[in-house]
Image: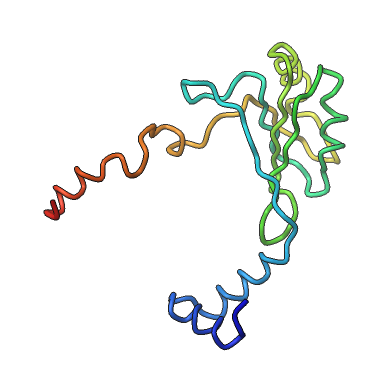
Length: 152
């Protein structure tokens, strides 16, 4: 661990001021963030068992979501992304069912239903546009980039 003097010098050399340094220190003390894993098939689309649940209240937890969706079938996973800065959920979650039919039943019955006083939207999960579509590694076109830059 570096002394406070060397930590300040390290941050200054990277062009980061006090605001960024303090924000990083606050993030370091937050609980570990759970990762959100959504199963995707080979075509880059989410499988039809994973649902997006939006419009959630910040007090909703995994147990409450599981209790709300368990009547429609066996649940494989419930994940609620957490905001780094506030430590609360981001207002949406992913619920993955064992069977496709169970997920369809949940959409039919839970879309625009009320959980903790808020109407939630329930749809099939979709990948974030632009992040999963490129199948090449970043370094795969390194030679082409070097030729364009004239370095080769």
